[in-house]
Image (cartoon, rainbow, N blue to C red; front, side):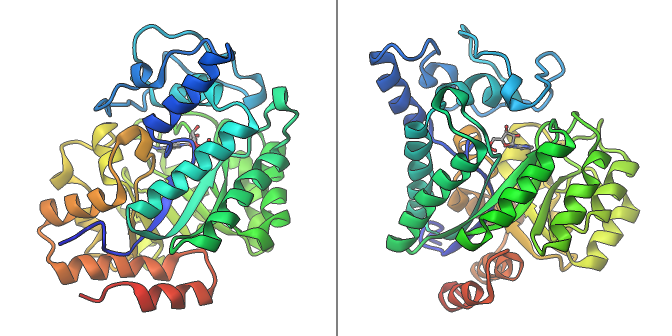
Length: 358
Ligand SMILES: CNc1ncnc2c1ncn2[C@@H]1O[C@H](COP(=O)(O)O)[C@@H](O)[C@H]1O
């Protein structure tokens, strides 16, 4: 089967984590020539073939809102810590409007080249003080890139705005306001993401309630890490009435039952979970095998293709190989995601007409 040609839907992709190393390198070369960065070359910081990024950030925890993150340090050896890779490195390199535009365009064209026909890209609104960029400008800039791309590509993209678990309530409310402001330009939902060991999710209840009231769709990173996932947290998160949930790894039986009862859309990220050791074992041990029997729609997704190195076509290839799916089953899996996109009915119709039946 030609997995690249298979029309695919990607619903769980973080913008900053989806930037290819080559693209980061190109930005670095330019900044280095101009004396604008002291960071290490991305091809050294994130060597080709290195995908074993670890979610355990206990030694490197960075707390506080983005504005107060420490200045990026000059690194000497490639780090394997996942979350600091963003706060200490990628955000330090992509710290102006030009790099935001360059990276967003690059991510969009990479997904298009991989045969993705519908993408819900997500990103955490980030103010870039040195450029006088507010979060509002950040969102508008990403949306402008998306709008230009949508005009000339089979790939259609919408945007989801992320709340980071390290944020406080006012910051989360600001994300809801931005999602409201830009919904007529392609913002279709909000997300809760970030280090699963950080923060108390009950703090965000008013933000999710407000989003629900306004008809903004909700997706939530759910039960990502074994030692931080508590029944209390999962109950809270389900009370926020998410339309979809991501990862869905360490789920107790009663919570599983509730997810199945609601037929929630599941964003499952195979390679990410294997490389980051979020699951025990390997591809064939992935909980995709369990969830596929439940009738919950599944959207195979990449999470952070720039970090974990597996394109969406490769995720479908891996699933076919490790779960012995035939061509029809692969097509059904890919088509199943149509029903849980946050996009409008017209978009669903376009997808239904173009996605393979067998
Ligand atoms: C296991 N995977 C994951 N789990 C939880 N959060 C993740 C993530 N992968 C990425 N992020 C979140 O997305 C941000 C980067 O993209 P944006 O700057 O928002 O575009 C990271 O800082 C993290 O908060």
